[in-house]
Length: 254
Image (cartoon, rainbow, N blue to C red):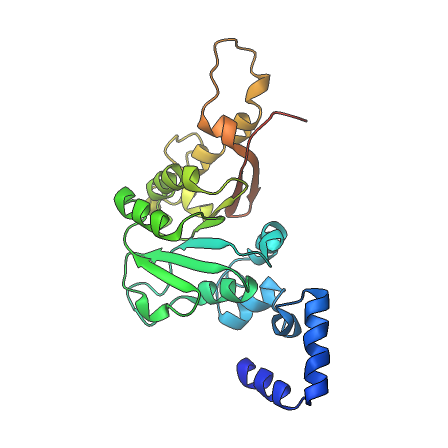
């Protein structure tokens, strides 16, 4: 529908009007001009348009927009774990199309344990495999190249979330962002979670230690040796049911 409107708009312009429009776009570097006309920069409206639960069932899009808007007009690679639609190959992909629209120059990748090839389209590529199969993950990373943003919206099983993060975060591009959704499963037993807030096996208890990693230079111990996360997490943000981790050199500067 939107494509038809755009095409009609273009056809309605005369040669001189088209020339002026071309100069306007070039002058202002608004290459995503039509996206802007149809709220391409408003992630919440895009979520509603494409029917993803990142808004409505959840309220993730304002946080996403706050953290990812700096990438909007860059040639990024985004990998989202989980396509949606469970085992139906003709369902899912809603958020992938939202990301494709929001990042007009980005390449959108995803992976799922089910065949989701019917959801592929230009600038959207989907791999089939498990998020805890490290050989498969390595093949995905090799195929994509550098990855700027990783989103875990996969199985939500605590053990899987932790294992996937441990394997993929080191492969994330410097200054990239790793995002985990639906962290409420940390408290649900059938996802491997627990209401015991001291349980070391839950995903929240795994990630809650990272603020200490940010402050490792303040540890009053001459014998302490900084680990990988001490040195390579520069920011961490906790929200209701989601976490953002920034990959960057932690200099320990205030």
